[in-house]
Image (cartoon, rainbow, N blue to C red; front, side, top):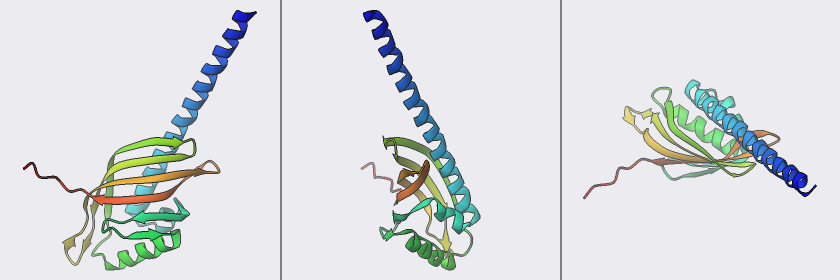
Length: 156
């Protein structure tokens, strides 16, 4: 009897672990798909789609160090920037990593390359970026997005 109880507990523990791992793998896939769709939206200039991935209270630290808070403010800032550009910007990302703080909070890090020109001057370039996503009603949304210019350090 005691052996059967121990076996039952072991089966329950393994089933719980497998379910948790499976749910987390599904969430990793959902987050990676969101990020791919977001990049496509940025590259096609689909503003409505871009900001559908952001929470109402989302914030962003831009590459110049400005803090923008709220989806409406993010949209207005984006529209203002788009007016100044010489051409449609292009974005690419690589080395996306996803880690979970909890079952409904994910942290992302990635390398980004931007091609943004204003009056012939390249203001884009290589960036290190990070974001925090929150899972709400089984959907992931961006609550914080931070862009940092990549600055190589001197070997001296």
